[in-house]
Length: 319
Ligand code: KG4
Ligand code: ZN
Image (tube, rainbow, N blue to C red; front, top):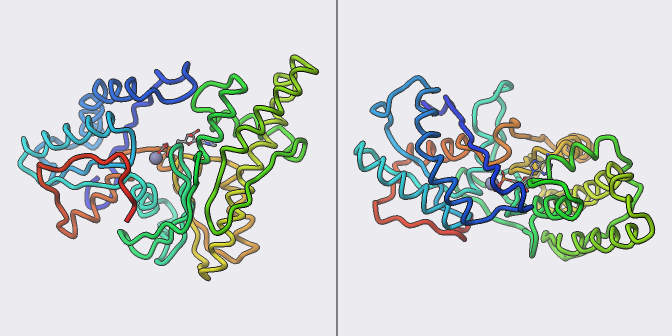
């Protein structure tokens, strides 16, 4: 990133997890270790600069898988030390939210305060964003994240990891009302998705007992119905929060914000509720370097640096 503009956003996707139906932490850290230097070199080359042009290094301190965070933290410390430039720590979840401030074609950015639904493989949060680094979690999942609900159902159906994008694809030609799955009824703005995962498991077991090819023959309808249930659960709480807090500026972020139904429902419900809605560019939805760079950029401008004694925090809170 140069002066708030992203110059390169290189992503090394980790295929090693596909066959396990979920991220294997040790394999993730090994893949980070293997990829981090080549990815940084590629980014520097793509940006058309040299290492010596860098004025600070921003890195993810957490939350996330500790082994992967350690690799990123150690590498960033070493590079900052070698180049004698400042080090900036970024909270991964703040990064997802701040991806909305990356310059885009329409050049529109949400105004504070706004509400952001941050939905990823590890988190599901309704966040009241008062300022760049002043965020309050109004509600979150008490068990599985929305992305996890997609991925675990995919695993049950034999769809490779990460299943979210594939369920999205199959759902496009399915009937969202064909099968009914329950949504949790928690008070406030919290979510629960573990019951949903169990309900699809029992539902499929029952149907397969009657008809062994049930999944193959009804895949699109199963995916559409399941996806519809997750999105409905998300909007139930999102609408409640925006009404209670009287906020009309609403954004979505995180890997699941790449979901086509979530994106179209945000526009449809947003019109009904008279929201001004914000959806990140596709490339800034799932984990990416751009979102860490923009968060780092705002901290850099405030002179918020960290020392070489900084350590990663797998459970780092958003505020
Ligand atoms: O933000 P992210 O890249 O990583 C975490 O911080 O967890 O989110 C990854 C999650 C995965 O669970 C993946 O299945 C989900 O985002 N995802 C989707 C879609 N694209 C990614 N879920 C539903 N529909 C999609 N199109
Ligand atoms: Zn993420």
